[in-house]
Every structure is written in C-alpha cells, then in structure tokens.
Length: 114
Figure 1 (tube, rainbow, N blue to C red):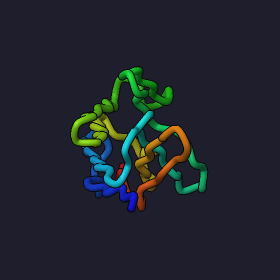
Figure 2: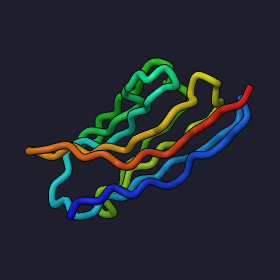
Figure 3: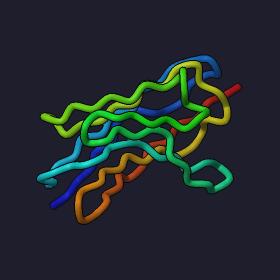
C-alpha cells in the first residue's frame, strides 16, 4: 500500500520560516519527488521538485527562499521555506512520480500572516 506521510507546516509570520517533510512507503522505484500547493484561490501550482538524478526546479516565487532536498534511501523529501510571504499561504501537497503513476500526500496547511 502506497503512503505519503507529510509533516510540518503550520502558522508563521511574514519573514519567518517553516519546514515540510514527506516520507513515502510502499513504492519501489521513485522518479521525481516534490511539492505542490493549492492557493486560497484554488490554484494548484508546482513549488519545487527534485528529479531522479538530483535536478532541482523551483517555481519563480520560491527561488532564493525555499530549499528542497531529497533522501533516496529514506524515500523522503523536505522543503525548507524561509522569508515567507502571505502569498505562500496554501495547502502543500507532497507528490511522488514513478514510471507508471503519481502519488499525492494528504496535504498540510501553511498559513503566513502579515
């Protein structure tokens, strides 16, 4: 059974920091791992991803502020978020790509107060 267990998130003030973690289980071979977020306006957008060989992509708004990292042995992906802005508010979803499918976590709320 595939599971993506997320932790972290919560409430932060603008300019503060939060971190997110996601651990996958029940998946034999993982390609990309990363994070999406659903904004209060119900837009789903990619925040950051790490490819199977370590290539990293950030959405423009996350560059210079967020850091994604991946531990292949633990099947874990982390997102360190700093200099948070109110636009970072949303539900953050961990995702994992395999050759055949994609899997999503249950989502964790991040709220940034100005």
